Length: 275
Image 1 (cartoon, helix red, strand yellow):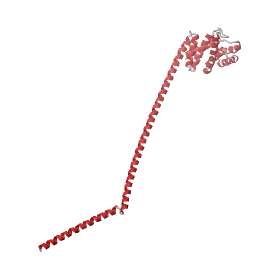
Image 2 (tube, rainbow, N blue to C red):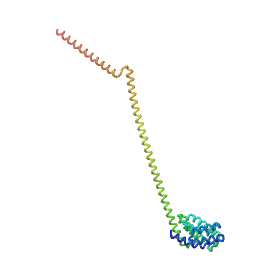
Image 3 (spheres, one colour):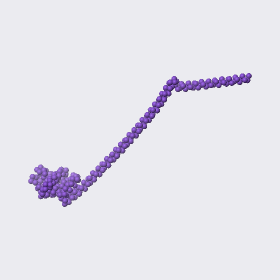
């Protein structure tokens, strides 16, 4: 970068002298040029601004003020005055003027230098696209300017690097977005699976509860039916069992009695026969 700035400095020193003044701003421009050569930037800044108060379209005042602000490392404001100088001298080109007022130079030659300086200011502001266009316009007006060619190639390289970096950043951002989308989808799927599992568990639990309640209800109904039957017969199950046992005992007693009577009758017959 220092190499290109050194060209710019040499150009501004020579052009500050060659782009002279119109009668309206002659004194301020002369004073500003003297301060510029002495590298008294603040004083030159004031002088050129005073010249612009008298003639806001002055090519020399805008051009030299842009150079001064550049040397003061105020590249943002320098760009605006460089644009003004380019606009003014371009109008002169379109008007077909043979030379810039206050100078013996043709508008195209002055415009080439103005675009060249505008390109260097754009480089300092990292406006590589603007720098490429400015150096291109400078070369169109002065194709033999080797410094403009070198700066044009350099600016194109910086612009390509910037675009490649932006493309890489965009790819990284897109990749991050895709990863986030995949993660969100996986999370949604996991949540849906968990919800489905919970629903299945709830359904199974509800079914178990229903089955259990149904079994309990059936057991309770059976018990109620048994109790109702017992209550309808007038006796409990225990009482019925006792009654059955008593009946069975009675029957056995009756059978035993019958057997004894049969045995006595058999004996009496035997005695009668023996007699």
